[in-house]
Length: 468
Image (tube, rainbow, N blue to C red; front, top):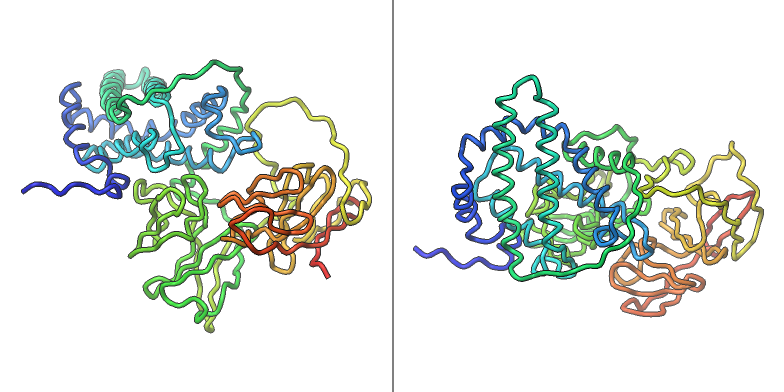
């Protein structure tokens, strides 16, 4: 009986139909045997031990060179740390799955999907990773794995070390062919450029954090319960998008059960919770990446999951449990991904509503959720506060401070993640533009103006309040 042709959705989820057959063909060609697969499995713990360091080394290398660095930058030219961690997570998942030693048809299709995702024919046509970088990544991993095996087994079990390195080398040949075959005739040149300095210790910290999250190792964090809605306000089959401390969360009433997950696609940060939900499959409206709404798992990579939150229903009201946000003064400094010289002190900006004092804030003062230190919002940047339960974005425009609701009036996009140019903030989801002074729409698709808030500065502390 002839097998039915695969749909585009099937290909995105499972890879090309002939992936399994081609993978087996290549293993025979290079001489990779079931005993080699068993050696891969036995050496898996060694690879697991060194994987965070390997991933950190790899992304440190990518961020040094302009052509590869460009894939991880925000519109303002800074490194997109959230997206960088997503890519780290996918790379970690790929090599953890490979180190398991299970090379069935599902694994082969997964490799095919990973390769195709980097081409112009992937799920996101706006992303293209040149074939040479894919080849380089496999070579990088091959060298790093060999070094890890040699370091662990030298003088202990030389025979097994040789078998393991041989098995991994053969497997890399198969993986490389699987990844390269999807490119066809796609080729792109590039010009040489100046390299960047990268803080490797910071990269190591990110990689370890990604690795530990993948294993389910989480640090204890104070939790709080937040009201969402009354039960009747979210009928079965419906959802509600809520904002908690600047994080967008989708709360779903689905088949009699309740689920809450972060409204941030692991691919490019799209508003996944606003997408189409069919059966248990939630599809991101940006590039079609699919998730199981009951588990948060990405269908093409079950080890990659959306952040989920516990939902409680009592007395006819729906609540979600989220991590308690630490006070600003206690938060650790953002990880610096690039090495730099100490920056000269910037002149303290004046507030639009009230210039106030630029004196250093009193150390003993406890900040409210609607407050922050003036020195923490440099010109051209945006910061979030909470005013009467509403997430508010505060903008520093050439030393003047303005504040509006953070949620775009079109589809709820997070304006703090958008681009601020002069007095205009552009929503990162669909491109709506607003004037931060008045809240008025400057460009659609949004039609409704933003709510604005009052900003005052006193003793170096910015205070945001509801406008009268």
